[in-house]
View (cartoon, rainbow, N blue to C red):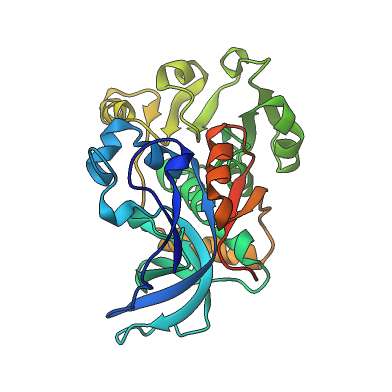
Length: 322
């Protein structure tokens, strides 16, 4: 099978197209023929070996064997099932999240049927389904599970035009919040169209000088800090960062000191959020923002684009046509 692999940390050019044996599903595994996957900022960081502490998981000097094929979110078709699989059968259209093992930048991927995988709604394409998984489920985890956003509260989304941010805006509005977003000027109209009540163009405006106070500030891109955002947080507001060991320590400290809090963490198993995502997609309640789509043969170009920091929404990789 075709796959995109990297053996050393570095720029997009470390990715190469290779032929690998097609895996065989064992026990309760599904053999998924991947039709579409994505390139995320998280994967580009993995490719670069950043942040350095992340190498404890993926390999200190070079990527360990199990993560040399990237690809976290996927949509495809079940090609075969293991002897103990009961929930799916060959021919099912599925989508989901591979977890830390990655591996969706390939024609085939084996996953346990208990992994973060579910049936695709009939009304979305493979490309659309793949472009929803990580962004929506991450937004769900931070806004619902960590912040417990309630109707009438005020939420600020930093990085509102990104793959997480575009879903965070929509989810916060569904929860009944007043939603403000931070993005570049070229994306203001897009974010307004997703339902924001106010948008800050970070190239000309400083949201910390706005006089606003928020019940939750969700930094989807790691370009802010608790210290910078604290002045705009309500007395019991929470700052929600997606990255940073410092923020983990701050979460522990602010949990006991009172006042604004830092809430962080990551849920790798996404079953509950996936069920909600599937329902929302089937009801056409979500707008899926796809910036660009590349064939897998051009995955290096896709990584260059994501590395540029100028993508809007999601970057999709088409592995199998159709």
